[in-house]
Image 1 (cartoon, rainbow, N blue to C red):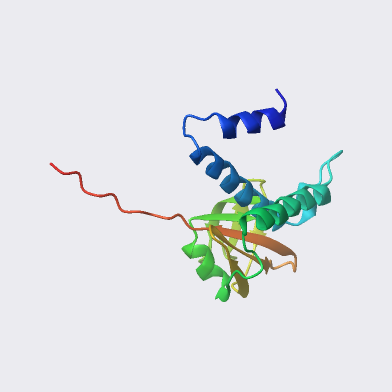
Image 2 (spheres, one colour; image 1 turned 60 degrees about the vertical axis):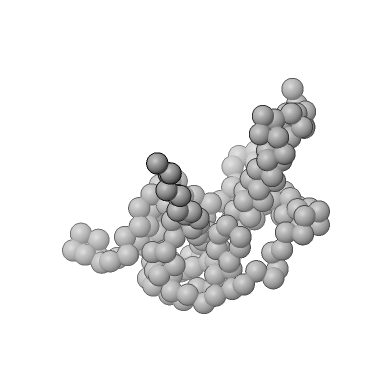
Amino acid sequence: MSNVEFITELMTFSRAGPLTQVFVIDALLKQARLVAATPAERFERPMFSGAAWVAAAQEVLDRLEKVYGVARAAEPTQLRSLFAALLDADEIVVDGYETDKVVLTPSLRDPQPFLTTASGSIVEMNDQQLLLTHGEDASTGRFIDIRGEQHSLVLHRLVRTPLRPIDA
């Protein structure tokens, strides 16, 4: 079965009905936003172009915008402290990798605030102002580490809906 046949079958014949179509489109949107906000060099591999990968994500975003009216350009922005933004986030992605650990308070053991990513990178940083662009499911921005290197940042907040009490 080809990828096209698989997606067509999934979106046409699903136990969840049309909800699966919404799920697939939402997943496309979230992944495309994440990839498009990440520097292409983070995806570079032998025989694999990071620039082509980011361009593909951008094309998916453009098509979603055209067909579904998914707005990106008019998303609100906010100037915010990096550390405050990190503290408020439920999930942090730096340069396309989820963070494993975030240490913002200097100590004898860790005198420099830092974070580590799933790729094994250690990013040492100072608090700084950053411009966050708020989307439907995440905020994106860029910050500079203590070595002067720029990093992409995606901050996710989980939507928590209180459970209704069970009637006895």
